[in-house]
Image (cartoon, rainbow, N blue to C red; front, side, top):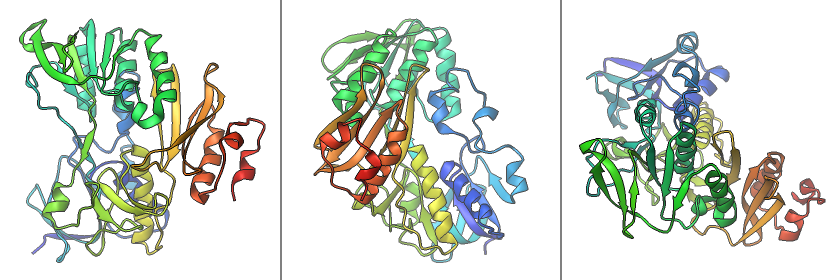
Length: 417
């Protein structure tokens, strides 16, 4: 027999669960809510771990998603350092790591993702870091204070943000990446090249079109990393290494609980984020949903997307019957030197054309990504207003031409049909 019962169980202590709880209360839901998270801290803004928090500009209270008293004030019970070990979706019972059992009326599974760890020679050496939580950022910051050189493995959003933060802390940084240009897989070579130049002007060195081969000891001792050796044979010296090799969806609980998994590696959901189990929803990095905007299964690993999905799940718990059709949005910054915003539904096929609006030279531009004559994504630097038009064009699947998008005299609002 279960020891207690709740109306809504939120599995995962991140932003998706937080926005779900917030939306439920804001819409007048008065039932009981229990959030169970394995994190050491109450829900926090994970994006700040590679930005202000890593650089020492914010403390843990400063990155909290809600003030400490919010949870009690809104009747949301929060359990940290606790995991849901299994969901019996037929009986609607959750077994916790505390040995307690909880029956639930409806549940949200938002277990997020785990960092992808690289299994190469030397991976056990001290001084090799992965970033996911504030504790990881603390360890990187502490190592950086005594370091002269660092190697960042990965040229994605996280890798470039880490490089910017470490340079600001006075460390000489080399970025090793498989791409020829930083951020190329996400933004394309034109935008990626612009961001790479921003970092190079601050002293960051890039080694592209190569991959990690092994870690080598050196420096402070035999048990500590001293260099990275690439598959191409280059030796990159570093007193510390930070690996930004992406993440993998955490579907362990979902698999053990019999939830259906999708072809993209996440928990399979319909357009309303309902899983294969009645009354169970999913959101965040491990959610793979039937997206009206993507035109099929989609899984998007971004903090802002998880937040939006938490709100959609809450609406559907209350019976709205809403499809999650919000255009994905995210942002990134390189210290105080450059910030970017992006909206898009780019799928596996990517895009077949890019259109620049504005000036790369002046650092105020947007790049529009087209597939089959329709906008599937847009990146903005200093032109946030362009993203509102991009959202409309993406949602409406409006046919456009490069000339129309690139002409700054053209009224973008007139293109949305």
